[in-house]
Image (cartoon, rainbow, N blue to C red):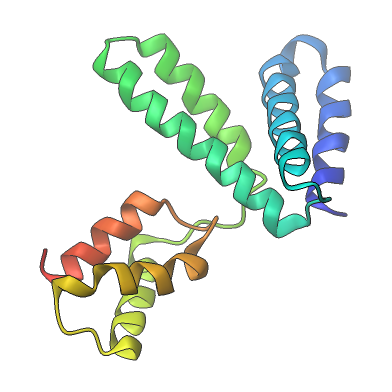
Length: 150
């Protein structure tokens, strides 16, 4: 079953659940709309990898908004966004731990023969496809900067 099919099935289940599935239903509808909009922009039907990229982008947008709401002192919005992120994470692949990211980053640095901090772009360029959808980009960037001594 493709990821898009799974979203449709879960949406049906959430619709039948009435009140309990309200948040999940709205998040799934939003995710499906984001996927559809991206498909229209690219003029192609998305495969699971592309759907994961869209969902990861939606999670990132919510994390960014969550930080802003926390700064503004809006705990109810932070809680709401945490729920939405939890629902979206069900559709993303298993996230890499910090140790796994560190291990992959070190392997990339060794493979590229990186000398110092000036090669951050090279490392990130090679590392991003390996962690796409499986790790938060900020965390990856932070680990790479730490390993390069920035």
